[in-house]
Image (cartoon, rainbow, N blue to C red; front, side, top):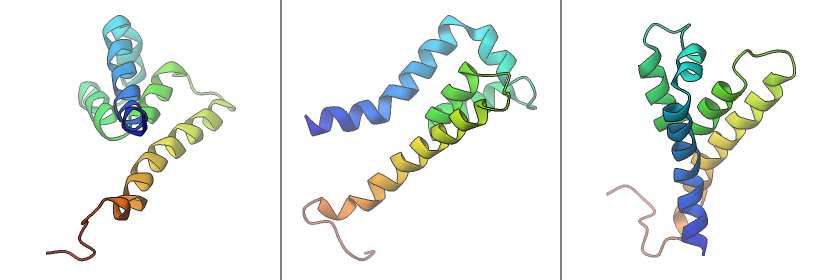
Length: 99
């Protein structure tokens, strides 16, 4: 059950963003239109910061309180990366130093 939640945490926002991009490509392109290479920003968001990219596209014309949701999405992305780093020593036979 734990592996299911870990997989869902990893693939969930990426899959949701990809499905949203396939269903409403105009909204995604409009959200990233201010960048030089909007498709590259979308793919980078999909790979490295999926919660932030998904939230940015959903609430695209950012107003005052929307920054709260963006901060929450950034916190989710940071928690995804930090949680994996913090729990690495729970893996059996994980080396404590670099080889």
